[in-house]
Length: 273
Image (tube, rainbow, N blue to C red; front, side, top):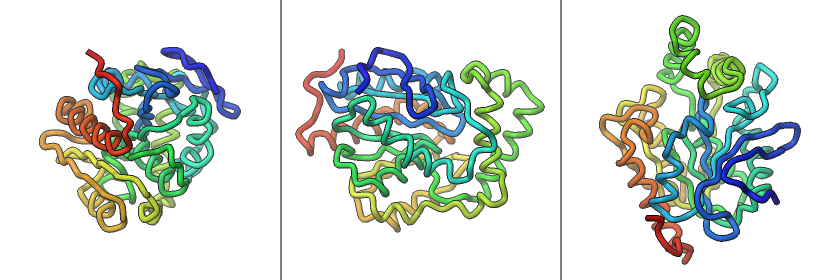
């Protein structure tokens, strides 16, 4: 088990993964493990981890997957089952490395899908619940169209320069994600079957104006899950409600965390002022 500093690097297999730890360590309090989006990183979470730790009083661990942020790059093209590989090969090692004892997985977009795959495939009794922000369970036409459009933006506008602030190898980050989603074979990607095996409560937060997925994603969870599924649809937000409607999203996620941990008698000992 790694002794966690406020920031550092984890060696997971052949990769070095950057991380941040906010609030109490996993051996002191429950931990929220944040899993970023397809173009995300530690830095792109902004102050959301800090505010979430303050609102709940528990620890928040956030890391950049290989190919993102300051973590090691990956070989391209990414395999089309890259989210399954992250969920089943990498995430378990990360949880063990940080000494994860109990808490929740909170994922955004690709990170939400990875969290769902993990919880539906690994009966990990340490995981008390899932907070899924703009999750994908199937590939929709709107997703492909938006991802094709952002490829054009990346190659013809200042988007590449903006993303380079957050990724040491920005092309590795962008094309690893974009190339997989635009591969015609990826249209068959479907993780809805794993939802029936999730045994913990789920919160889904989605922006009403999400241009990467429709409310069909929520309907699939409601149809497939046997566990409780809470839904928060946020008007005025798109694909990143924790940035576009930060207060509402923070309140929804923190409230869900509080409810779940109280059921297990694991609420925070004291709030952070």
